[in-house]
Length: 505
Picture 1 (cartoon, helix red, strand yellow):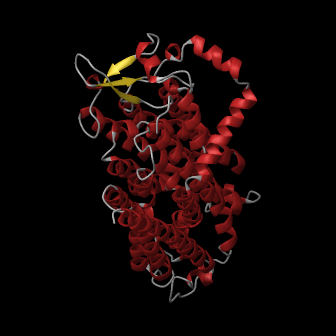
Picture 2 (tube, rainbow, N blue to C red):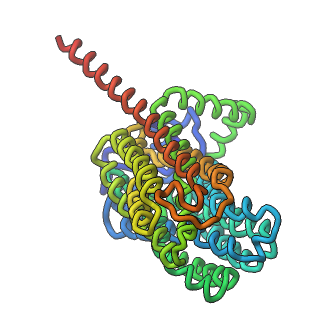
């Protein structure tokens, strides 16, 4: 996909060190800026490919990957384990006595993760226009995350808690996370699925560690002091990551944009409404031409409506089994440990196998684990641990399969396109994330009566039965959507093979 918005590798002869030249492209596309213009225009900077760090390996690529992994651990690990805080808040008379506490308190974690997911397309569009400000945005995001947790420790109401621990933290996290992820396509190509799996595994590693760290702190110091310790840890932990997360190709500075003569010509030829309408038509045409991506987007949204519910409610579910706080944290930690395995494994396999097969297989396996391991077997600690492990492996690795689909699209080596598609997928996942919480609150009844349960469905007088059925149905529906997409792709392949065979006769 050739575009002035992307890095262009142009073969040039002669060159002193390399046969490839990397152009730092202008900020906006203009039809008069041909490759010949770029060759002769002294205002557009160039770099020899040989002067850049290598892709898919080398000290700087691995340093970026490790630093991005720790950004993921810190930014996502806290909200993804919000169930630990939720269990503490629901047992705190100060918060429980406030109006709508049963509805608002479970909303804090999903609002945080939902905003970070949904902000992807908008932030990626801004950073595509102003790439030089990505690292500044990361620094600002680190400050906001630290300040929001400190502020939440002094929250005097649930609404303040929701605003600070939920919304403001998410704004800082989004400013940190999306620039970090946008550098991935420039550092990794052939190993992009594996690299994506390593980064995404950071969320699960945070989810493994925090359920063991937070409960003792909450029990000894309470939520306010724990939030202050967490704020300090976040601020200190992000410092080395901010140093090593950087672009492979230097971001262009404001003075490296398209020459003034070209900007003037564009402004004279197109009004602002015309440019906006042109962009909308371009996006609309692209969507119509990509039905396979629309199928993936639909399955991704349906999956997200069910995926987050067990993560939020498992600590509360464990409490209904009269398990200790340590055992409740163990269940959540095992789920996240399974997610580490799933994300690394599926990320590696997405570089090797058909992503449709991987996606359908993980969705079917997750459906069975929800209905059988959670719904039938999770009436004691052993069954709940088994469910947490299998759910983490199969459901937790879903996001790492995205890379396999994006690499099948034209222009897979275009970092801007990859970031844009990731942004759309994260947006659809965020929508499901946000709405899954109020849905789950309605589905879980208010009964807390302690009864002897013979299945997971009957725990706490069938309090979680509808929730389990809903989650399993979401995964089954997503599997059905992926089956349609897989069948469509197989039909297209057979049709293309048949046409080639007919043409060779």
